[in-house]
Image (cartoon, rainbow, N blue to C red; front, side, top):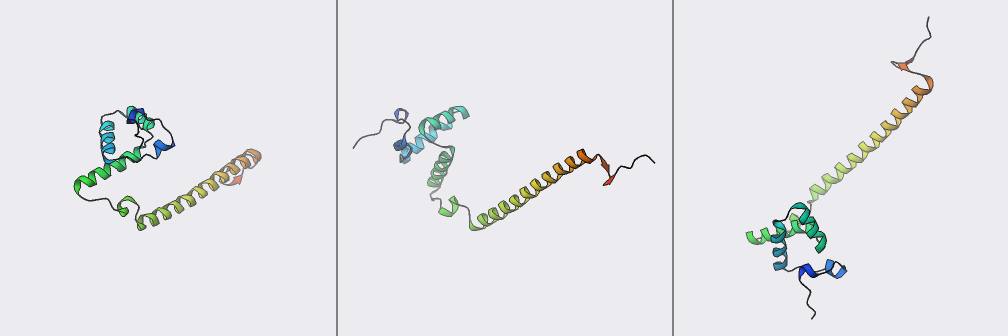
Length: 130
């Protein structure tokens, strides 16, 4: 069986991205990135084909392992109630975005009408001097 080169020597390719990390590798990586600055961490993650979300998941797994419990699927995913609330909020946001776009169009039309027909006060046209 062909051994993989040490982490720093691997090239980023498809086989590297699908690499299954052992618990020891995960722990070593978490320890290595814990002392890095934000820029250094970003470079390290890019170099090794990792994401910040992956590190977060590994940290949670490590803490769960140390506490003696495994995170359940429900802990990792949104609950049904949260998904429903998210759907409602997304729908409300869409409706408000539509209303905002409509108001922007109406305001633009009002400005064009005022530019063509002249300024109006209180919704009534200006009268010529009598």
